[in-house]
Image 1 (tube, rainbow, N blue to C red):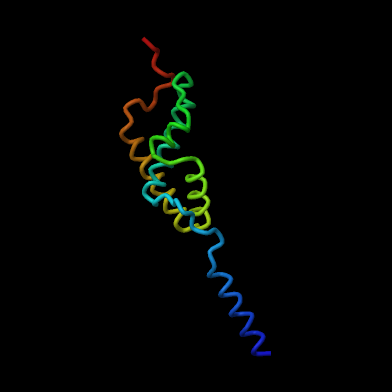
Image 2 (cartoon, rainbow, N blue to C red):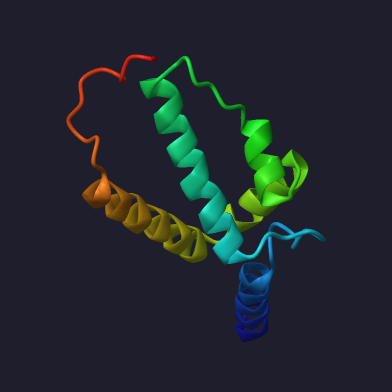
Length: 115
């Protein structure tokens, strides 16, 4: 009975130690992933504010020198590591809050008219 319990505990510990999502070949570093999510949030916010100045997400991939597959694989990998993923988004939130404190246009109801 002790052997069966020991075997079950061993299998449980080995199962928990395995990585569920393998590390992709082209993994974006944490700082680059944070920068991408910051830019993605800014792009999303700006597109809902001024629809005339649409910028596609493809330009964001080009700006960061990656493709969509690299982003998706990296994002999936980091999402499988909740503590690290939370840390990334806490950094994103802190940076966006810093931007909000510096925002000189905060409080405007409408976009400025084009000249």
